[in-house]
Length: 495
Image (spheres, rainbow, N blue to C red):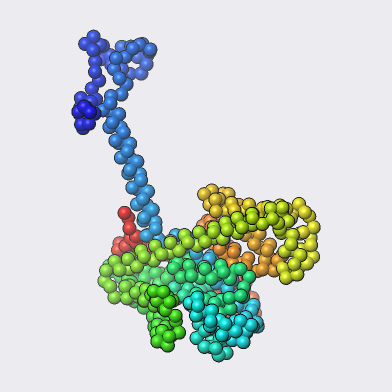
């Protein structure tokens, strides 16, 4: 290889080779065609249009630009994954949906709780104890076989579901919500209609999400604390940063954390929590309790903001990973259901939907079922449409418009199943799982509609109750967000 090919670009690489009889410098091909002193179009030009040196230089610059764009994209991706929690509205809807579904299920089955999960139910306490001893499943109902203990666990499951839905102490309530779901479902494994499996899985995933950032009592408390800090800064002559954790410590959170730690220690010392592989649930619960306890001392006793930033980065990574798992789980449910249906002969000939409509167990409205199944064409379209929608749904995520249309159709289908087949809780669980794919703009508009409806209801009650000698305050305006301070710390890696 010659030096001209392997060496660096020199100034001579940009000088074209010319004959001695060539035109003078004034007549070089630097002007548009047709100008005076230029060779006519089509005439032979002994000089190349672009020198090899310029081509190599342009190629190097192009490769540098491509690498620079790739680096910027990677830096943006890393900053997004570590600097913020993705999908705050989607995770809030999932939290409200699954907690509300589980709460409604427990309240509806409250009169039948003894037959379903009680110590004298068909699935006896001895059978449940033998099963959990083999599969190492966690259930607090196996700690004692008395009626009083069963009522306590059932009441805690109802209370944790309600508080988790409202977003009060979301980190703690997510763990207690998981305890309630596992305790009841692992006690009687034959209870449920399919939606309980979805709730079981999502209860585990929600522990690792920051699902209380919006539409929660925690978010309202943080806004009020930030507004109080902003007012405190405005009242000082010199702008200083006021930490709400130092001025108004979270005594309720610390007390709740301490009480739960004592209860966990008592259960561990009594040998009620099975160790299993690598410590099993004992390691999981103690790990969650210890990690949650790190937040308060990191915010209150450390002078530097770096411990808080580090915990925020870890929380964002776990949140984003859990959100991805939730989305993958929903896609897996639909994909496996669709491909399994394809193998059935009734789904292949388009008559599968007809049969459950004529089962007494799945016909709460016989007249409605008969009307829907009267048309063979309608039955065939619904059968094939269900299979196509379930198989195609994971692939539509790459096209936002097609995904939204198919998502609306699937939510409508689950609503019809809830009414026609009498499976409300299964449908609510699947709709809550579908909510992870809802657009953020739609969820924001939905939140605005709910807020305006609440304000109108409050204003009407405020006008009507004075007639009874009572008054209600009008709707409170949301506290404005505090202005950014000079000591604002960036959370996340900028890579």
